[in-house]
Amino acid sequence: MTQNPTRNIMLHYPRKLADKPIISNLIREYDITVNITRARIDQDEEGTLVIEISGKKKNIDAGLDYLRELGISFKPVSKIIRRIDERCTHCSACTVVCPTAALSISDRERMEVEFVEEKCIGCGLCIPSCPYMAMEMIE
Amino acid sequence: MAKTIQEINERIKKKKACIFTAEEIVGYVNENGLKKASEQVDVVTTGTFGPMCSSGAFLNFGHPSPRMKIQKAWLNDVFAYGGIAACDVYIGATEIPDDDPANKIHPGRFRYGGGHVIEDLIAGRDVFLRATSYGTDCYPRKKLDTYVNIKDLNQAFLLNPRNGYQNYNVAVNTSPKVIYTYLGILQPHIGNANYCSAGQLSPLLNDPYYRTIGIGTKIFLGGGTGRVSWEGTQHNPTAERGKNGVPTEGAGTICVIGDMKQMNTRFIRGVSMLGYGVSLAVGIGIPIPVLDEEIAGFVSVSDADILAPVVDYATTYPKREPGTITKVSYRDLKSGTVTIRGKKVPTGSLSSYPLAKEIAVTLKSWIQQGGFLLSEKVESIPGPESGQTFKPLVIRPEGGDES
Ligand code: SF4
Ligand code: SF4
Image (tube, rainbow over all chains, first blue to last red; front, side, top):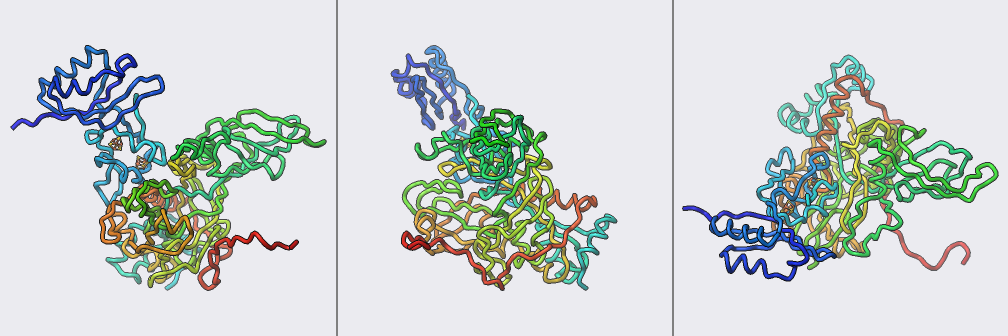
């Protein structure tokens, strides 16, 4: 059995495309399942969207080509949230905020907080909740 | 037979002292018993690292030319108190810049404040000093704008009026809305429980009656050495205690002092609490001489034997009403979930257990290398026999000596 791959990507789209039904096209025309995990429109109306996409590989490839043709830049989400390791004190304040347990403690003797990039959906909730300012977004 | 601190120091000088951390001693005592522990073990090192809002620094800049009586000062735009001698100021950990929007857009971010200025100074970064004054015949200058660096200051020392809290509340939120507190973000309907103590590693939890920790005790502070200088503010030795003598709620506190020039930003850092404010995370480690069996018993306390009160930060706490929902142990808190009102609740900590351990281990190695001798306290801080309590403020708009 082959499972449909799931990928998290972050899209940047320029103002001129802000009113285009891009997401609904991805769903309807390319048969991709889209789950929006974070959306932000800046004051200059440039948009940033983090989406989780799953579907047949060939559909995803075609959908991503469609985004490229429109001039939308994107990158995988596991690369957009970073922990600054020297700042992390392993306190665990973030672990009760992170919705996917990408930040969690597995060894309860050592009590160190691990950041598992693959589980991160880029929601950004950990950033303001870290008292030591150890989590950041690379944009 | 009981030992003395002098005897222990002799063994430390000969590098023959037997030292455990407060975590290691738990297993040792379980295996060997209290009698053997009191005979064999000389010192147990403790550690804690977490936000301690009642912290701040005294700084002396030296005089500019012409001289100045600094009245108001700002360091990187954060206000520092100048109502003391001419070129001394005190910068408090929780001070925020005058133009910080604070909680006007709730929850505020509080990215920078007094705690961060202290961290910047200790990191050796230049900090911008702006000061104003009214000018006097002896101190004519009225304005000052200059960069300063810790290496050029005459003195820079922390003086933290309330640190090292012996136990603390576990915060929950029973309301239907998220709340933002000094114990972190609390999700509605008891969605999480946040705590802030190193439990079995925490200094005053290992010396519940302040037998060896007192005024003058030499300590690890922020990566350097410091001293306990007084009882801390809100010191409450008559707090409720369990059978083992360990308080089951916030109890004793200490006022500590130490040279910032020795400190290291691994163990002292600015803190930003969403919707609450800024603070300073302070690393403290205190060695406890194992003088007799009673002390061996105290230092072998484990997370399972230390209970903390669960308090609702949406209702009873802000209103200052009594009411503890339940008590939970640090073993349960550290397991990642606790049961509150029949519900499994995930736990988060504001203080860092790994750093508390690193502090206890660092202090242990300092003592092992012979570079850190134990000090006899000069005077005790008040214990339960003092009857001292932590009183609330009674608001009385009427009265005063004039009326
Ligand atoms: S809240 Fe920040 S410092 Fe604490 S464990 Fe998470 S990332 Fe590290
Ligand atoms: S952005 Fe932070 S809170 Fe969100 S999933 Fe990733 S690690 Fe967790």
